[in-house]
Picture 1 (cartoon, rainbow, N blue to C red):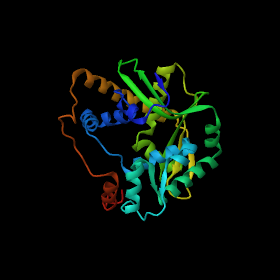
Picture 2 (picture 1 turned 180 degrees about the horizontal axis):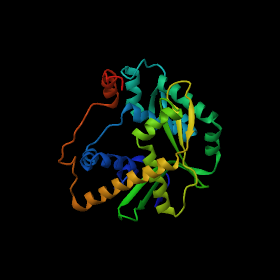
Picture 3 (picture 1 turned 180 degrees about the vertical axis):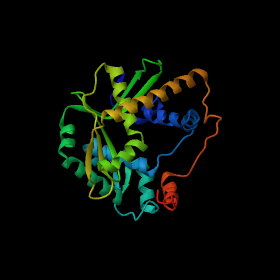
Picture 4 (picture 1 turned 90 degrees about the vertical axis):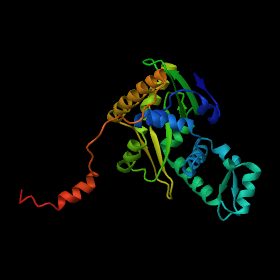
Length: 272
């Protein structure tokens, strides 16, 4: 099932396995269940990501949606709070944040590949719900942009867009798993295989460097392995109603590798 123009809160309310949920399941099913039951206010970083998506994917709407608190020193000022009371916190930007978003918007559209994706026929913020053929559970994802020629595009705000540095968020935030999961959910829902699914990294700080990252087969294979393990675990937990935390086992644990290297560097091995 494909939903166009589905509000974000309605998407989040759909009971189905998502990539963010499966990442938590990989830590433990209990961590997933706890976060699912706990209401969480958006962090400043999450809110900035939402603003950026509108600036890049819906620039016309961005230009009219927000009110800029030009006279506010910071969010504690009476002027800022007054605007929030009038139009809502999700529509008010500080002057600093607005300038940063405009800078990222300009930098993104100077990237020829990004501009081409935005000019190509496609749809933004597309919600997809499908059935996992292996477990039978419902799964969902929300694409930043899907092109009519079967490409997908995902925007990632970052601190360093260079390849050697961006491998860290690709790994730590599970972007490799997201690309694999989203690609398969699209196939289950439509029968079509995506031809391209790059990550578009854009730096939050000036000069807002940008870079595209096309994940290789190693990343995609690992992504499928990890989301499949998590999805199978999620299905078992749904079936049993049991959401365990860590196994009742002990582990032999050491310090971090850099700390160990510091010690080993001080050890005299007698010339060996």
